Structure formats: C-alpha cells, structure tokens
Image (cartoon, rainbow, N blue to C red; front, top):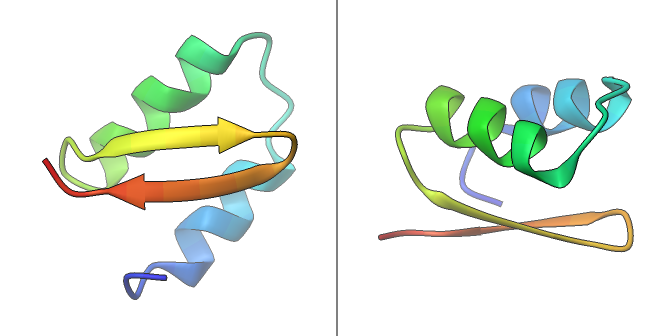
Length: 47
C-alpha cells in the first residue's frame, strides 16, 4: 500500500457503524488522504 500496513490492519479489525466514521478515522491517521472502502477492501488516494 503506502507503508501503513499496521494501520490498515487495525482499521479493518475495528467494528465501526458507518463508512463515514471509518473514512474519518483512516484519513486522520494517514494525514487527510481520501479513503475508499469497497466491499471489504481499502484503497488510499492521495489528495
């Protein structure tokens, strides 16, 4: 990915209630990058 496998693995294990919450958590941890979650996969897009 972009060198944050531990963060991605952690987020995938977190039981969240909405995609928006996950996006906010991941983008905050990775420095405000766009996060796309599609059926269990996470893609990181630099702004």
